[in-house]
Image (tube, rainbow over all chains, first blue to last red; front, top):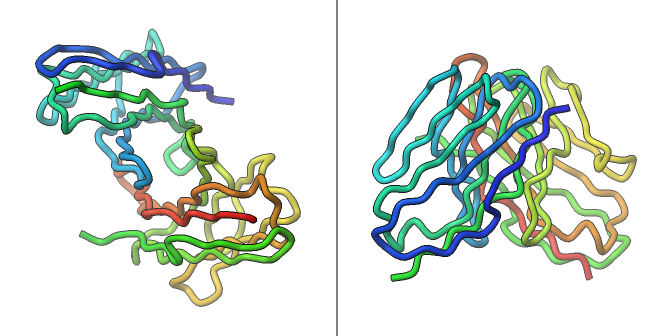
Length: 111
Length: 114
């Protein structure tokens, strides 16, 4: 069964800095997701990555997928406090299958 | 934009009681899911539902759990005899019949078992 591992699990960083969250998965995944969760809130879909080499960007966040390495990254550029949240990487074996989540990366951006 | 809606937002129940968590998926979606998230932990899959039947369930989804789509719009999760460890946030999700869109999650129901 698909397993998803994220690191780091906790990240505290200064505003203005760049950082990358890594997501490794164990078997072939049909699609790779990144979700954001604010405390006590629901899961907001950030990116869906479907193919090798896929790169998507939204504001200061950029996600990429390397299916050969079974690795996805979420890169944060010039972090701002509003990006403080927990970010989950997740994958599915098939489009309509359950989503398997990583443990999440709790990102704390210091002003 | 259409949303998945869940009610109630917070449910407090005595241990051993039955609870029903309700979800209204997005109207043209065909696949429905329940997930749970124990406080501070990762989101875990419970069950998926398609064509009026369970398509997959996890080890967590034991005999105390059941799902139903009683009227073509609601999708419910019933926990028959709640235990303390059932305290968690429960998320409903739905996905459309085709295309790359991700599963859309509701805001969740926080279930507190006393």
